Length: 192
Image (tube, rainbow, N blue to C red):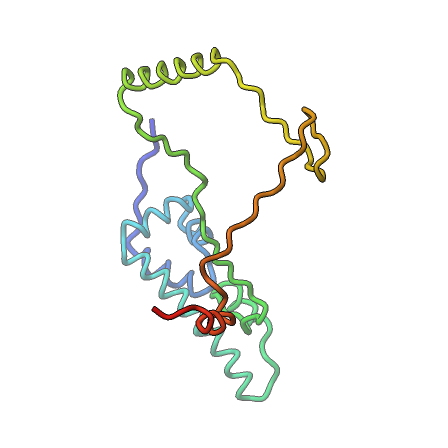
């Protein structure tokens, strides 16, 4: 059988505020009430007044620590290291921002995704595969022509079969001329 559910006492808000102002964390406040930390967390979640009392107590502690540092600064004394330590550890204070602070703005790139295209129904796919297979078998059964043999061309000497290599064909003259030659061509061409 489960233990009976515990509820906060009547003066819980005042006690929570007083203990938080003295520097108690939620675990220490729960111990003062004689309950588990999870029970105190449940109380603060269910009762906004308890959560507000905890927040007010923490703010009271922060203001007192801040006042100590300010008082010493006005009096020209060195800073209260203990107060500064508590402000840094418990209230998020920091002396300065580091110029070497690295801000990492990583972008999560999704991994490669395989895209499968729709090739139709199973029957259409089977017909395409059968046609491809038929063409492969037909191509494999066809007689192969001998590959053309390329031999280096020489100056009229016999190549392979004893015949002289043909001379390269003369290239036809272009029907256009470079821009630097066009005026000269224009003078030589007859006018119509």
